[in-house]
Structures are given as C-alpha cells and as structure tokens.
Length: 562
Image (tube, rainbow, N blue to C red; front, side, top):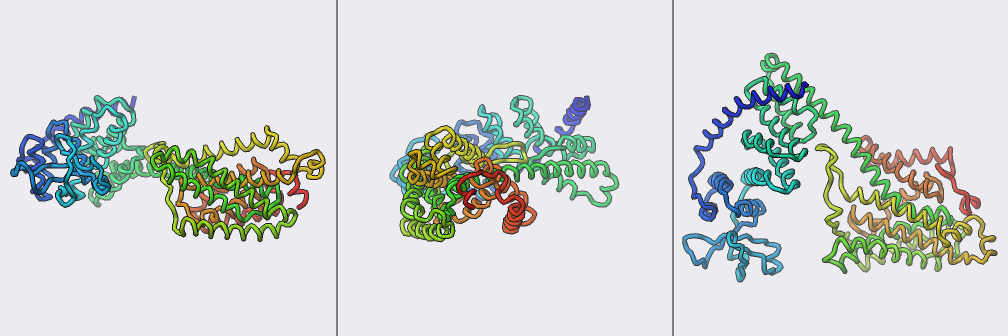
C-alpha cells in the first residue's frame, strides 16, 4: 500500500517538476550553433570546427533522423571517423571515411569505407586521410547521445548497456525522455536502471517532497553512481541546511549506510567466490600430487613443472590454431594431459623407479629435474612470459546484482576442476587400472604375486598424476601469463593441500583445497597476501600436530611405511 501511495505522490510531483526542467532545457538550447539539417552536411561541419563548436554539431547530428546517424556517432567515439585531405572530386566537401587503422596496417581491403555509401575505398594511405578529433568531454556527450538512441533498440543487451551509460551522465538527460522510456520498457533490469536514473535526477529538485521521494527510491540501490551522488548530496549541506533540512540529511545518511552494508555483504560474497576459484586452481594442481605423493610416497618437486608444461602446451596449440581460439582451448586439455603425462612417465622410468623408499633422494632428484625442465623451456620459448588469449565464451562477467559482478573464467574453472575430480574418481573406482593401482598401493608383494606388473602400474600412476597437473596448467593459462616459473608458485600450496586434506585421499584434497583457497581470500584484505599465506601455513603446522594424517587419512603403502 505504501508503494502505491508513494508512486501516486511521485507522479503528481513529477508533472510540476517536468515543466521547469523543459523550460531550463529550452533556454540552454538557444546558444547551440546553427548547422545544416542533413547528415552529410552536418558531418562536414565537424572538419573545420573547434572542440567547443563540435559539441553543438554533435548534438545536431544526434537530432537528425537518418539510418547512418548511429554509425557516424559510434565511429566518432571509436576514433574511426576520418576525411580525405586531397584529390576529392567535390572540392567544396571533403570525403568522410570510416577507417580502421589496425586493418589498414595489415593492408586489408575493407580498412576504409565511405561513411555514407558504405563503399570500400582503396588506394589511399594513412597519410592521405586525417582523423576528426574529439576530446573526453565530447566523448561523454557522444556516449549520452548513443545511449538515447540505443535505449529503444530491440536487443535487450543493447538497451541495458544504454541505460547504464545514461546512468553515468544523468545531468544531461531530459526527465521527460526517461518517463517515456519507462512507459514502453518491459525488461525488469532496464526498468530498474531507468527508475534509479529518474530518482537521481529528481534528487536535484527544488521541492523537498520530491527529494524525499527520490531518496526513498534510491534506498537499497547498489549502482556505483548512486553512492557517488548520495555522497555529493550529503556533502552539499552547510550548517544552515543541516538545520532546515534535517529530515533529508538523516534519510540520505541512512540510505547511504544501508547501501554500504549491502556492499559489505557483496564483498563477502566476492571473497567467497574468489576463494572457491583459488581453491579450484589448488585442487587441479594438488590432485596429481595427491596421487604421486599420497599414493606412491614420492616427493615430486618437479610437479610444478608438469603444470608449466601443460600451460605451454596450451600456448603452442593456440599458435597452431590462431583462427579458432575457443576450439584450441578444448584441444589443449587432452594435449596437455598427454604431454605432461608422457614426461611424467619418462621421469618415473628413468629416475624415480630407482629411488622408491628413499623420499629424501626423490626430493633432491626431482628438484634437479625441475631445474632442467625450466631451463629447457627457457631455451625453447625464451625467458619472457607468453600470453594465452582467452576465448570469448570465457571472457567477461555476469551480474549477480548491480554491486556484484563475477568473472566467467573463474566460474568455468570451478566447474572444470570438479569435473576433473569426478572423472578421476570414476577412473580409480570403475576401471581395471584403478583397481590395479589400489592393489599395488595396499599390498605390493601380493599384487605382484597376482600377476600385476607393478612397475608399469607405478609408471602409469605417475603419468596420471603428471597429466592432471598438465590440465591444471591449461586452467592457469586463462588466469595468468605463461612463464618458466609458473609452476613454482603452486608447488608449496599443493603440498599443503595434500597434507592438510589427508595424504592420497581425493575427498580430502577437495576439502583441503577449497578450505585453503577461501581462507586465503578472506585473510588477504585484513593481513595482506604474504601474511595471509604465513598464517595459513602456521595453522596447517598446528593442525598436523594434532592430526598427523590430515582431515581424511588413507591407509596404503605411503602411510604404512611412514
């Protein structure tokens, strides 16, 4: 009932406010320069105009109803609107072009287009054309005009983007236009943005009743522009206004406090999400180590280099498939598994199999192997980091609410890590190899007497752990640059996850990875990144003192011989 009453009062006050708004707008428009009423002629005026004059010309371009208006404004905003300096057929008018400099450098045929006919213009160099320049103030003006045009677009995503742009510059918008847009809009998100925009505009009203209604409408709104305008509104109160308009100040401060409280909850949710994403990365990095260290009892200091090899495999596959970035990432998953797995089998057959039962020797040997692999990568790819392009379906963010945006790449990595864990669990529980691996883990002599080739089981187990580390490298390539030292950043954390969760236990690895990831992300804002890691390490040391076998202990060769 309160909502309906507020809307009735709102509409009654709006009609009076709109009269004064329109009067102010019509008065300010007197100073606009007079330009031609056709789009080509108006655009011609931009060529010789000063930046101050261009503002009025851009307003005139936006007011012309022409199918090319949107294209001209967008090209001007993107710094792609040029004109031909010489050799024009019509000497009085310069030929206006849309030029993509990146395509022009690559000598592409469609690098230059006639702005009005759309025809491809060839035979012109970069020196033959000159850009129609705009400054930041003009860009803001162009964005506002583009948003006003796009707010009636059939595409919902375009309307949402246009409404957000209008919200960023509410001072230059006509209130009547917002009301008309609200009457025709059906999408709830666009309606919410437009209602917020209307409230911000009415917050500048000279009538106290309208300002109070606007503050009530803004309560709980999480758009950044709302917090900025509320802070400005509160800061504008002098000592006299604080007494005469105490109710407005109190409501504004309460509204801002409520919004800040909601934003703090969003901060917790964001930390939780980033913690789960970090936990997913640690899970992928630690699953392979849980097999090689937890099941086989091998302290593999080269495990980080298996991650690095997987990341470089992703880079190489992308270089081989430059036109199919999305498909190349999918191809990289099995490719990285095979490359890292094959290297892991070579390491086990050549070095590790001679050192079973001697953990200190395996630590030193695999540390030496890690240095060799790092230097090999530096010799082949160079010491500099390599960038792996993120596919379109992994890029961008999704909105939970106006104050919380989460990235798609982290969401996919969380899902991907759980899928890898589930597939590995099925392999270990439902396949012959998994049965043989568990048999060798529980009782090697008995497994050997039953005809199981324990040596090859060890080699394939080590290869499986290394291959999964390679898959972790594929995921990491989407979060950071690929370099020779990539794996070293995760090797210590991987060991902590395995020890904390329970040596060799996949369920413990999952719980341990997610727990450490979330703990790190919640401690970092308070203690800093370095101190947060130290606190987590101290906690694990104290925890292991009470539970030496971790959260979920697994009986096997590594434990029984320990």
